[in-house]
Length: 277
Ligand SMILES: [Zn+2]
Image (tube, rainbow, N blue to C red; front, side, top):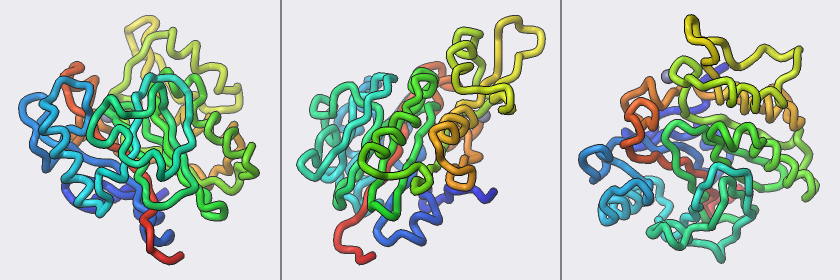
């Protein structure tokens, strides 16, 4: 399968075929390069809550907004809590969580909208960004899936919420973005036990035991999220997974690799106004 993400600039990747086939759609993931932050946050840190200098974070966000031609005033962000709450947002939410953390949507790990002119944004450093598109219904969404959100089924939650609005899973395309790979992600049996509810005997398991370390496993959160989206009813051809690992690749921040002292990348999806479809 071809890689869905391509580098569009040293500061960000985009989902190439959505960009090419859906006029005005901007979806992608930032790198850690080309920003103003220093030290552990060198340099394009977009996370407010990591003790970076606020002025640098704001400058980084404004710069990314310019590069995307999507000004930060049109962004919407959330206080992510590793739960599975998903919010429907509109233009009236524009600017929330964009240039200050306090104005973010509280307790939210997923966002979706039917409106143009707003950029849905969530922050990452190893957790899995999920991107959703229904071309037919003109709806976009995104969700933040660390291991907790993943096993809580945040991806399936989003699909369920869209179903209530008459959008069938067959009409939804999903892309699973840059995040920690199986080889870099070691977890204990507690995580594997929680994941089992999504894995049937027929599935090839997205985890394997670590040789010589009892109770330790390598887990692919990307593959687990794919399984969950398939269980939610998305067709196999509608779910694509990146090959990019935030820990393997030096162009990203990684919570694991950097031992917790690191910045955050931005996952984003939005529809520009005034672009005819
Ligand atoms: Zn890796």
